[in-house]
Structures are given as structure tokens and as C-alpha cells.
Length: 205
Image (cartoon, rainbow, N blue to C red; front, side):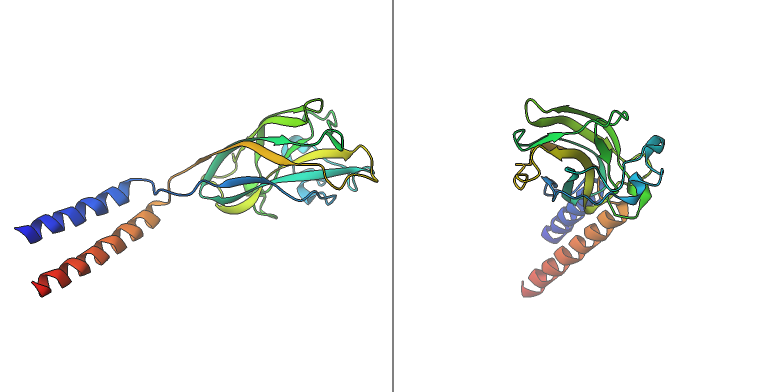
């Protein structure tokens, strides 16, 4: 009877693993390294609505990437970007983007291009508020480490632009559950591991 109860416990744990999302560490959103290299999708007309960015950028302008690490089936995200407004200002090119551009999560994979849902630059406050995006070209969201967005800035003094003070506030993500095949594999492994331990105990008894 005791053995039957133990096996029922193993099966119950396995069933919970098979239907429940795993506890995962939250992805980390962070400010990346400024760049003057403009991604090809922003120059060749393949970006949303055919919007383009000049390449090379005007003197003193650069793109600030915002990255994420540890994403799993990423569906959508949101963050505020803070900066030192005595060193840089956000640039609105008046093309409808407010200078906030979606990024290919995986460089070269246009299907991983994010669509910007919102973003509100306030140079007087030194912040770009509520930058949010999603992935309408994918059924399953991207996973791993990648870039979420690029934001256009300019140096107020090109001779003194080495420390713009970029940081992230209030980063949030929405992720999907792990793939069913992954859950099934983990559940099977857990059942096998528990089964072996119970068998060894029974043999000792």
C-alpha cells in the first residue's frame, strides 16, 4: 500500500509539470552600447510602413539599443529609458516613429522584428517613457538574448558625449509558457528519476 501511494505521488507531480508553466527567472532588460551602424532593415524600406533612417546618420546622432537577456517565447515588453539630458537628447525625426524603432531580436531574421506600440520622449525630464512592443510576425515569440528596440539620440556636445547615463526603469515582459514538447520531456525525466529512487528504497527494504 505504501508503494502504491508513493507511485501516485510521482504521477501527480508529473501531471502538474506537464500542464503548468515552469518557474523561470525573469528576463533582464538593459541599455546596450550606442552605435552609429544603422541596421539594413531601417535603410532598405523593409521596416514597418516603409519608414527609413538615413545611413550614415547625421553628425552627432546615434542609435541606442535596448536589449533583453533570458527571454522564453517573448510576447511583448515595456520599459522606460533614462538618460542624462545635459549630455544627449532624444531625436524625433517627424516620421511618425518619435525616433523609436523596432529591432530584429535575432539580427538578420526579419520575422523577429518588433512592432513599437508606444513610446513618449521627454528630453526635459531625461527619459523616454512607456516604450512597448510586440512580435506580430511570429506565432511563437523569440527566445534567448536579443535586441528589443533602437532609440535615436544626438550628442549635445560631440566633444563630451562619452557618458550619456542610459539606464532602464520598470522593465516588464510577457512570455508564453514553454513548448509542450519541452514540458513532456521534463515530466518524463522527473517520473523516471523518482521511479528509480523509489525502486532503490524498495530494494533496500
